[in-house]
Image 1 (cartoon, rainbow, N blue to C red):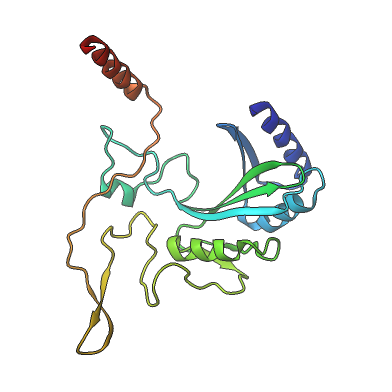
Image 2 (cartoon, rainbow, N blue to C red; image 1 turned 30 degrees about the horizontal axis):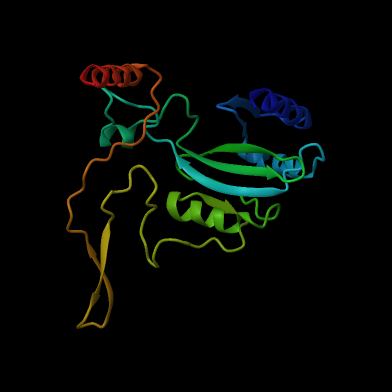
Length: 226
């Protein structure tokens, strides 16, 4: 599989040879290319229209908040770390990621573009793949990424009047307001939350073998008991 995606990487690199700011990597059996947001539409059009590539279907669009990604101390991530740090492997805090499929050639690719921290905005790919419509609305709703040129960029999962973007790492775990029905006013009202915020521990990718050793020790102990 890795050989297959290495060959696909060569095809993609050749098709995009005239465009700068394109970086292709094959990791964990998958091909990812990182592109400049200014070249995103041009690159996506080539990926779609080039007959050797023919990425005619968009599977998903997602927004990612890389705050605190890979930052750990003694195996634990603190809320303060998540809010204030970004991994050195991440170019900015936010990224928009596109998963493409070629039905004709039966291969896949991931396209990632990095966005500005203060104002994450990128051109919409809806003109290229109409199926990206709801995906981009979801990324806007949950992460706060703006897609310029989107035909109807509205929230899609949260309630009307919702404040903030719940999948950002600095969004309070308990939310910001509570919603309930007021019998006297005969309508739904919003109030400040009454629950205390708790600390969450995001998933961390670790490159050491501590956990493999622990699993081996646990297996040895079970063998001795048996």
